[in-house]
Length: 459
Image (tube, rainbow, N blue to C red; front, top):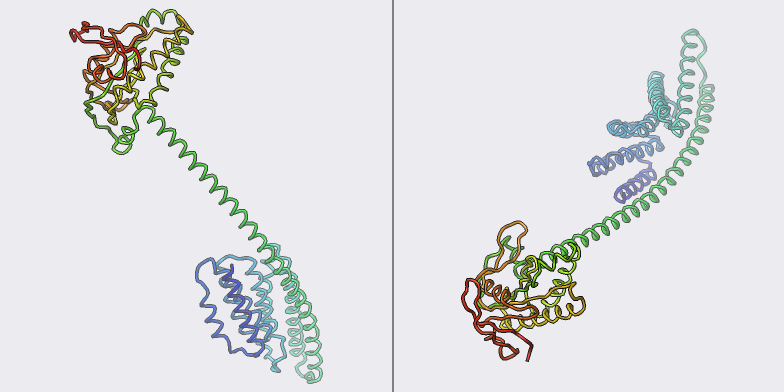
């Protein structure tokens, strides 16, 4: 829009200069300026309007031939664009220019009767075209302007025809004197001058309307800009909210993954899409089990049973983070955890038995509070080596395998309710920091006799 106004501004100044010089030799300069206008479709209507305005200025200068030329060029563009308003206005302007050619006496030259009639017929034809388009589309302003010119064209043509007919009938009649013809021309010019004044008033009114319209266009542009800015801001805030929502959902997914897998394992799974099994030489495995679970479960409703298991395991889960221990899984009433993986921990044994004491004490206290409404728990602990990893692709879980897991299970199976039973390998690592009670060699299923110890308390 700014570019268009700038070009119009240049053209207006150029034509003002042409008017002051009263010269019609500026066509090449104007043509050159027109050619510099952009040829894109968006600028065609603006080019047509400029051509139309140039024609109007030539018409005011009295160079009607140039006026018709520029009007005709504008008319072609309006026709290609199917701009009805432009067609109506430009057709009328061409008609008015032809009328001016026929009746203008400012040049001091009188047109031959045939040339005058031709211009009048052309004027009437173009003015009728303008009025027909205006009526069809309801262009009242255009109608008001060109009805007068059509009436004047028809009146002058009728007058000329009447004179010609009279002359033909009275071939020997006296030729009108120069004085009579001058009076007639003077009267015609007086009427024409009055009509031009009225037309100028109408032009001034249209220009004022156009100026007001431009102001409204400016206001509309500002409103559209504000609406667009608001829309962009809303789009931005919506996108920001969506991004935040996506980030939150991503965090939920990552938290869920971390709830299933150790952090290092989860990262490997995200980066590689799989997790390689790893061997760990020094880890400590703990398994808990509720004594007589089957018999106790019969006294509970399903809801009570699940609720009590949840309360116990939830408490155990809260103890693990303090000692860098990984929960592996729960199987029925069994609870399996390991210390020393996936990140090596030199204190894996002491950390694990510390958790074992915390679990035991929690269950003993709960037993005093709830009695038969809760369980008696056995805990087994063994230290050794395991293999850890993920198998399968559906509902996968991080798991551990190896004889160390089996021996931890034997420690739990041979434990007494409310006690912690540890193996010889675990005892060797914690004996200096914890009070342990040797139980002797006890027969373990499929393992023969194994040395076992009750872990009592920290020294």
